[in-house]
Amino acid sequence: MKSAHFTMCKKLQFILAGTLSIPGISPRVDAHHHRVWLGAMELAMAMNLPLDEAMIFVSSAICHDIGKLIVDEKVLDKPGTLGEEEYIIVQNHPVWGADALSCMLPKHQASEEVCRIVLEHHERWDGKGYPAGLSESNIHPSARKLGVVDAYAAMVAPIEERPYNDPPKTHDQAISTLLECSGTQFDPKVVEVFAFLPPVTRISPLYTH
Ligand SMILES: [Fe+2]
Ligand SMILES: [Fe+2]
Image 1 (cartoon, protein in one colour):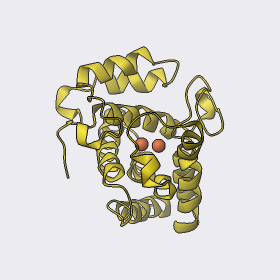
Image 2 (image 1 turned 60 degrees about the horizontal axis):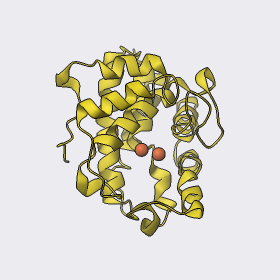
Image 3 (image 1 turned 120 degrees about the vertical axis):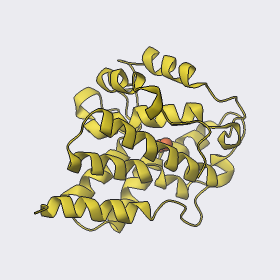
Image 4 (image 1 turned 180 degrees about the vertical axis):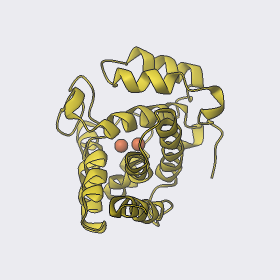
C-alpha cells in the first residue's frame, strides 16, 4: 500500500503539471519549464533517486520559474543587458514563486519542500547566488540539482526562446560550461552525473511541445 506521503507527492505533481501553459506566462518561460522538467526526470533516473524525492524534485522543476509571472514581460523578454533595477526585479522571481506556491499548494511537508526548492534554485555552491547566498549543503539537495538542469536548459534553448538573441550553445559547449563551473556555481556531484549521462538521455535542443 502506498504511503500518505507518496499520495501527496503524486497530487502535487498533478497540480503542478497544471501550471504548465498557464495563461499569462511567457511562452519562453513555458518552453523552458517543459525542458527543465524533462531534464529533471532524466537526472532523477540517472541518480536513482527514491521515488518520493524524485517526485518532489520533478514537481519543483515543472514550476520553478513561476515567479516570473509577476515580472513584466518587457523586462523578461528585453533584448540586451538588463539595467540594475530590472536585474533586481528578475532576481526576486524565486521568492515570488515560492510565495505563490505556498498559497496555492495543500499544506503538507512535501509542498513545503517544493516551495523551498523553488526559493533556492538560484543559490550557488560557492554562496554567490540569490536570494539568500546559501552555499554547499545549506542549499536543498534538489535545488542544487535543479540549478544544473536549469542552467543547461537555458544554455541550449533555441534562438527563438533567447531574449538576448545570442546563439544557443551546443550540447558539448553547455556541458563544458557546467564542468568549468563545477565546484563554484554548481554542486560537483550533480555535474558529475549530468555531464556524463548517455547521449540518449540528453535533452534535445530541438524539443518543442
Ligand atoms: Fe529561475
Ligand atoms: Fe529556470
